[in-house]
Image 1 (spheres, rainbow, N blue to C red):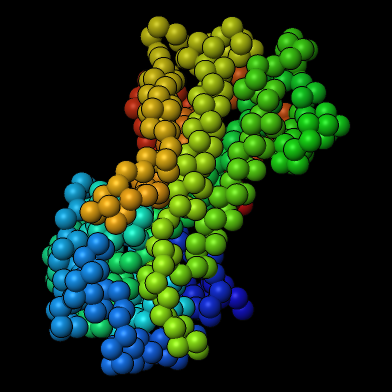
Image 2 (tube, rainbow, N blue to C red):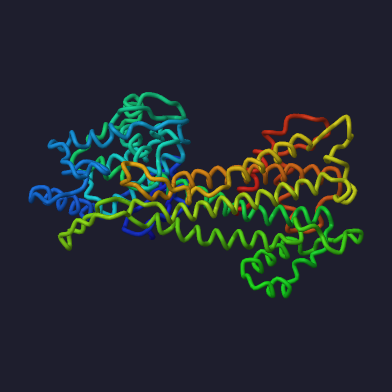
Length: 501
């Protein structure tokens, strides 16, 4: 069994840390109570003992014997517990709304995995506190604004650590409450930090990695959903599949384009093209193998980065007991994730552009094969998809406006100690926001396809029928105008399930 194999035991997922990388899919499992077993406690204890020996020998260790950041040139507090309090107290300055509890719990899992490598000098009490919290549904309340992703996610992880102490606030069963009360109700004991524990908790990019990983998982599903939706649209409109010619796509030279074309051909096998369709369809159909294929290729790079981050140790300094070394450096610098997240944002935005244009094609009577405008059964009296398209346009505009890369926004701070900054956390948040908008755009297109089927003929390709049946099961036809916001979300859920099957 690999380190992240999930097994069903008392209806709870179980993960084992054995020194290998955490699988991205485990980030979504953390939304529910999750059991984590540490396979090599001795490795953690060995790293912690070596850290303590270094202090006894009088060796300088950043953050333990010194001040923090540019104040490293000054001595830290002499009492270890007081030094831990100092780490957290000066970082509790975050602002903005709370992050989603699911994201915070994913960050807890990533931080646990990094600390379990035994290179941070953290004690077992920190590991035990994280595993105990993950086994419940507790999630610390963490403000969105504060991390630069340059010296780790210092501020947000400080809120996470503080909640485990019983300070600040936390969510339990979806309710926000004082953290002490949440711990008590969850049956958890407050964590008492000693030694380097507090700095080890905050001095890494675990929140950045968690957000980037969740964005990646969502975008992978959305790329598959884009293929399903494109096939359904081409079938409903009766498009000729000439644009999917395998030799044509192979000649393009990009393997992912040929792969998407193959998937579309499979879904459209047995469909019946209409003779009145144009020789060449609009780009929103004809160029989908090239567009979606490029998105898949770009996500391949992002996947490599996220997996590397999930298997790495983001902290400073690191301990290497086998070499009797304490290494000071910059493993908390989230530049790889920043670049990958910005790339994911661009992927999400372009897939969103495609979805919005496909929706526009489907509601336009000049191009949709004779279906009524706005897919209304009684234009003028009923407006059907009109509001859905307006919202889709607003979402695309928002995605375009916020797609500017965060990874190049460097500006110095922290007394010029942090003079180059990747802004990986903001890049990852942006990618996750765009991924969530994209799935709703796909939900809007799904509602429109369901309505088009209601007003016209059912798809002729067996590969598309299953998706249409799933959409019809959760979205009623629009014969009389009604609110469609919940229908869009329900369609998005259907597409997630279909893409994951």
